[in-house]
Structures are given as structure tokens and as C-alpha cells.
Length: 337
Image (tube, rainbow, N blue to C red; front, side):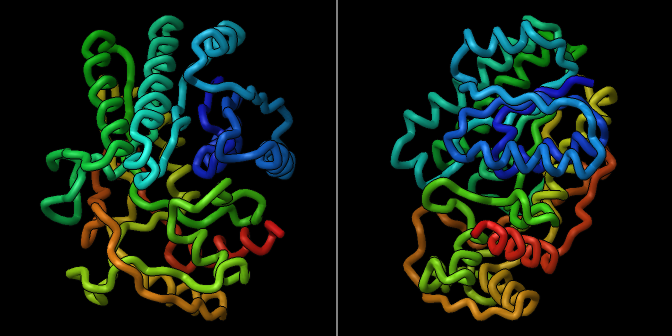
């Protein structure tokens, strides 16, 4: 099978590419390198070689908003499925620059969906987010809970989901799967690929590893008065390799999932910021100094998944625990130097 992965050199996309290669799929990657580098592509090829993968892994430096370039790529290959991740992903940045987020995340997705319709591609897997739930009414969160995004980033994910749902009625034979991620952390066990943001990190773990490496003095924890067991915010942290496996499972079971389906990818457990810090210190024997700062606008007390539907529909559940997430993140940080 020929699989197109948009944003395939990003943090999550690179891990998905590796998991697809492990299953011997033919992988074609599109990425505009806005938040990654060609070094990731080289490391993917190195890991593929270690897996005894002998086919070419093709990469196109392209922006999914460029319709003409997309059409050239779709005309070169017969794709069996598209895994779409390309887009901007910072909640805070989306609040400060909403137009860029609507342009990148909506226009790019519309272009990809148009190519799918034109080229008779029946499998589409979309990188969505738990941000579509906004401030959840209860946890764990099930897929049938009301969706109500509270920031431009979450709104773009929700809009694309609505577009997918509408299109599925026009093309009932196609499979449109929206995977709602919770909080990916960790890295590939090799240490060759992981979360390497080009600018200010959007996620907790890169801040922790940068403190551990000495490139940051201390970790700022935003808020200590949440209604949680230790006063810090609780989230569902999932190992990025487990998340990547979820995409492969969704692809393999998509024959049985025609129409539109939204599926949570999470562990079903909530960990606080301090839980993560303490586990990182325990596993890696490194002290992480931290200070408390003011809450950030829009942050909520807790958010974690009910992941039962993923097990039922795509035979997936998380396997890697918090210790592996912390150990693999530090291993990647050490190899970055």
C-alpha cells in the first residue's frame, strides 16, 4: 500500500512514518520544514535501514496550501490512504495569530480532501486533538461528549472534523477517521527522533528535558491551585510511539469503518505536572528545579480520555507507561547535542 503522510517529518509524523515502515507500507512524506529539519528525514532513513526496509522513502518539501504542488504529487502516485498531520499546533500561538491558523490548518486540509475526492482515495486519517472538547464536563472524556473548542487551534481541528463528516455523506464508501490526541510525550527508543521544536516548546516534556540538560535554569509550572490531587493541572500523557501505532491500527481497520468516525487516543489515566516531574527525576536520577507561575488563560483542571472505543474499533490500547515516556524523552535530549 502507498501511504501519503503530510507533516511526516514532524514530531508525531516522523514516528508514524517509522511505524508504517515497520509494517512494510510504502511511505511518501510531505513537509514544509516549518517546524522540523532534513536531519529528521535522514534519521528516518537510518531507522528504516535498521529495520531492513529496502524501498525508497520519498520526501517532498511542499506546503499543503500549495494546490498546484499537491496535484503534481498526487499525479505521480496512486495512494491507497492519506494520513494528514500537516498544520500549526500551538494553542497560545493560535490565540495571538488566529488568521495564520485558519489559513494553514483549514486551507491545507481542504486541499488534501479535494485531492482525495479527485483521485478516488478511500482512506483518510486526520490528526485531531482533545482540544475539540474545550472544557470537558466530565472525565474521562468519551467521544460522544459535547465538543466546544475554546481557542483557534481547537476550532480548526473541529472545523476539519465537521468537513470530514459532511464529505462522508457524499462519499459513503470512503473511510474518514479523526484521531483525537491527548498529550503525546516521549521519543523513539533509539533516541534518533523525538520532540525537537524549532522555537519555544508547546509541550511540557521539552521544557523538562531542557532543564535537565542545563539549557534552561528551571521549569515554570503554570498554576498550583487547580482542583487536582496536588494543585497542578492533570492531563492524559501518551507515549508518541503508542500514538503512532494508533494510526497504523486505524489504517488497518479502516476497511470496516466507512463513513466518519472520531476516536480518542489516550491512556485513560490522568497525571499532573508534578507527577511528570517526579517520575522524570526518579527514572533518570536528575533533579528538576521548578517555580510556580500564574495560571495561563484557558487552562483547565483536568483532561483525560476514555479510550475504550479505540480498543473496540481499531484494536488499539496504549502499552508504554510514564517511566518509558520520561526515559525515552531524556535519551532523545542527550542525543540531540
